[in-house]
Amino acid sequence: MKSANAVLIFIGVLVLGYLGLIVARPSLREMSPMEVVQSLLGDTKDSLRKEKFVSFKPAEGHFKVSFPGAPDELNLYNSWLHPAVIPLPAWFLADRELGFYVAEVPIDNSEAPGRIAAATAALERPMASSSGGNNEMVASNSSNNILMEIQEFLDRQAEAMVRNAGATLFSKAPAAAGGGRYFGRSVEGSAKTPGQRYRLQIFYDSDNRRLFAISVSGKPELIHCPQANQFFGSLQILP
Image (cartoon, rainbow, N blue to C red; front, side, top):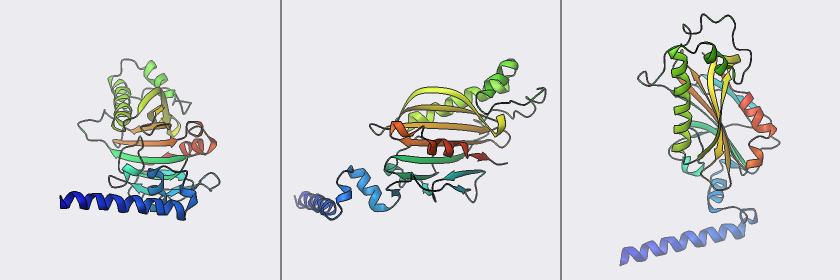
């Protein structure tokens, strides 16, 4: 009985504290409880729309990307505050309307498709486009099992990320980075958070067995905004 009363008292204190914050900070009144917690922790900005993009490279990472500010690490401890279609750990920066996320994942040898350097050596020219070119390469080398394995691997990885995030996949299209050097996938759908959409792109560095994921998540009308497009376009995969 005493423990039950203690729980009720604790809940009452939390509710009173929350109401007190709402009164003290009127800007919090229009936010959901989750957004209030994000705001109080300081890792969700009011707005990033006018912020200047800054190049970022993790100390142990093999990529560069530009965020509209300095990103924070997203991990198992704070990911519940920022549910995103991205593997952990990751780097992120978010405001109340849109979040920017990027991650690098080493692929275990037992899961990784083979290297494509030898498989593509016979090609007369590299892929000309940064989007869709990987399908052209596969079509011209349909008998090459390694290329098909990479295509299937990318599909599995994209679908697993969406499923693990509790999201829904609406569309999927081929993509490529590094002038066509890195095969990829571009997917979109509904995020787990009601009323939000996401864009996700993944790319595979077959020579070094690394997977890179870059994503935005937020209001449906913003996932294709110029700022989101600039974020996706800034990704550089490094050796």
